[in-house]
Image (cartoon, rainbow, N blue to C red):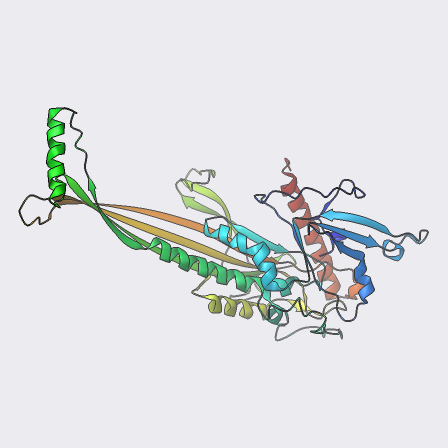
Length: 429
């Protein structure tokens, strides 16, 4: 990520101050973290001296040279400090996931919607982070342009970066979801039966004292109290997980899992009957706007494990629009979004029956049964957005179709940055 062009970074009000900025609280709605990829073999190690990370891993200092700022009249370098929620320097995918994304997956199991957006310059490792090194090298079966010759990074220069093998954060997140759901199923499901003494509400006095003495006698003989009830609670837990894979290419929304990946799909608001529970506007027909948006005609596939989920992702990656530039031989030319919808349903059935005892064998005579049922449903969504990388034509060498794509990509990222800034400012806009 390049903080100089990153609208999600937070420049300090006083760059020269030695006081470290106070990081935002953990409960903030928007958190920004930086992952620094190691230098490729074609880059001089001296070039990476421009980046310095503070001991607290929340502050980054970027030093620019005169030729980078095009200030030919000055020979002095300039430094700027930026504050982030966390900074990770050359860590592996599993380590990065464990410290930044894993807590979000835990929150999603409690019913929170989560979005992870990867933003940065082309070639900075966004697809590598989300999809993994294997998926990031997948190219469509047919391309309209031959990519220029770009040297691949050596494995030795990125040993720590790649130590997680072929696993991306998306795969780790799907695995975390299923592991969490299986744990909840084990914790929730079961049958509990107990006998509860009923209070008939009699007044205190001689009668109450006499009854109490009788109860004491019963207990002494190992007999059950009269007027008790047996309560049996049975709990079942079920869940479903569906996956959707879309791309935004230019102004078109496409379904990468559908039979027509090049077809432009439309969006619409989602309405439900009655009160949706979110305070949405109720229409004249009794329908409530849930605040959700759906892509008409898009594919949502049910997945039962990590293998099925990643199989669909690889299938979609083969249809995603990519192209080669001088900066990245596998440059993504579209924004990709993997959406995972999780529905959890916990059903509790309670059977209450009166227990009557009174014969010598202490047999239990069950009276009328009363069955109660409660249903708790939790819905949440997890989105992984692999944004197309920003690029400069001078460095990427993009021409023709690739140049038009780059203009659209940069424009879209600028608008997205403005939206996120507005959300972060929490102002009227």
